[in-house]
Length: 301
Figure 1 (cartoon, rainbow, N blue to C red):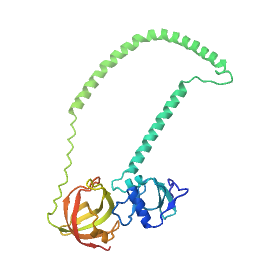
Figure 2 (figure 1 turned 90 degrees about the vertical axis):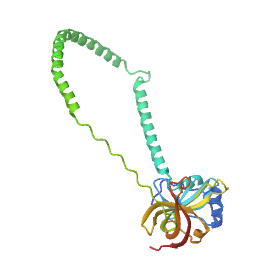
Figure 3 (figure 1 turned 120 degrees about the vertical axis):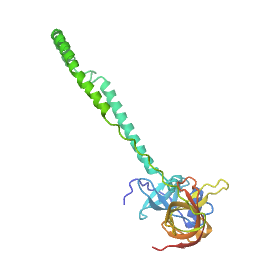
Figure 4 (figure 1 turned 90 degrees about the horizontal axis):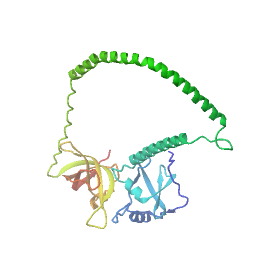
């Protein structure tokens, strides 16, 4: 696959080992200070959404990632890469909107340049204005126009009375048609009001622990206002209650030490016992939280 946007680094430093990569990613804010292993990062720019590897850096403000099969290297700002890890990242749409605005501005600029060019006098030759023959031709055209205008004035006087009579007659003929149009407009039935959309019923969550099924969608972090480090969390998709076959959708939980022992990856499907509560994840459109998951099992497909 071709990557025309890729910025190949002329020279860069390769991480000596995973420990060096984890340390630099912590400094960039891509991993929390508590992280003991790296994670999968995604590149979501230029219409893509694919996993990439951070292999080194040009300087402290320029990371180097590998795209595709590892043969393409691309320079990227670490903060920009961090924004791409959010599940609601919309950089693609923003880029498309920026291109559309730029196109409109370009068309407006071309129109203004065309108007200014039309307003400028035409110059040519070594002495400035074009040949005097054009000026003389314009003078002859003005003289002919005045002659025609004089003849049209005389003819117009004789036709004025005739036009006046025809206009009065046409006005009387239009009156019945106008009145008929008003009657038809009044008789036309009004369109029925649009039906209001009914809101989806609120999901009733069980108060006790239940057996749940979920798929790992993303590993991310959220700010902790009571600590200097961010909290590690897991976002799940296709969450459902097995006993009642109730679909919950998106939910999240803390990336606890128990979950870390399983070494979960994006796409893993698991089952566990837990309690679900309505608590939105900070800066993410995830409405439910999973508390204290236990008896966790990976589901092999």
